[in-house]
Amino acid sequence: MEVRARSEKIGKGCSVDNRVTRVAWLNRSSILYAGNDKWCLDPRVVLLANTKTQYSIQIQDVDVYDEGPYTCSVQTDNHPKTSRVHLIVQVSPKITEISPDISINEGGNVSLTCIATGRPDPTITWRHISPKAVGFISEDEYLEITGITREQSGEYECSASNDVSAPVVQRVKVTVNYPPYISDAKSSGVPVGQKGILLCEASAVPSADFQWYKDDKRLAEGQKGLKVENKAFFSRLTFFNVSEQDYGNYTCVASNQLGNTNASMILYEETTTALTPWKGPGAVHDGNNGAWRRGGCAWLLLLPLAQLARQF
Image 1 (cartoon, rainbow, N blue to C red):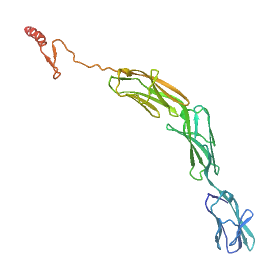
Image 2 (image 1 turned 60 degrees about the horizontal axis):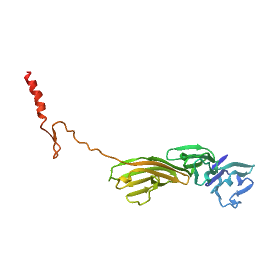
Image 3 (image 1 turned 135 degrees about the horizontal axis):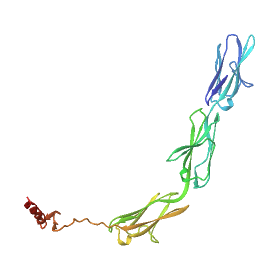
Image 4 (image 1 turned 180 degrees about the horizontal axis):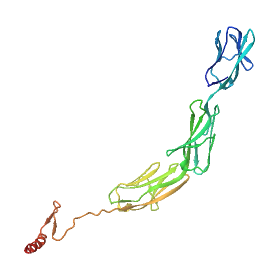
């Protein structure tokens, strides 16, 4: 007979009758209990019942060392008999070793480790968790990634399960470093005297440092009439009152320890052409209300009408 137990208490019992004169519980060759007398020193083993029909013991806080055969020995007037039970101890999974968070340059190789214990032996599963998707990778204690790309950055989840209890999960964060890449940089047209903005967006890990140049001259922070605003993924160059001298070619440079890149854009003058009403022959524009008065052109309409009337 097999008895499966998790890390908790387990009881074992055997049936007896009036003919029984002596009873005992044995673990392999060691006597645990003989009748009511305890022979082992383990405080976790206790006698539950010793009656005319039941003789049972209990093991509290079961661990893997308790696994094995147990024998209930019964002595009767005629002959002794035994009842055997085999205890199998199940242990919930536990992750005992996992790789720390790692930072690596794009193109490098990554090796992640996840070691777990349990009975039965747990199954290890790796998944990649990123903002775009959650994907299964492998079933192994070791995860190897060759030539890692920026898309493979994110958290890698190790799950250990053996159906004894809920899976245990731990995560490793993998940061992939790469040089800046400017994703958006557009020229801008602004009339004189208006507010103008040039924007430079860049993706990089670690975050890029930004610098602005007009032609070959670097623009300094706090320069009169200008404001440079740098964030993690973009830089904004603001002109509060655009003048003729502000127009021209500007270069945004984004850099980190892995490299740099740049993009050029133009701040140019945007002219607005006012739409004025078309003035036909004899048309007079009223500057007060914008209405058109028809004066000298009226006779041009009357003459063809008179000719048409004479025909009838």
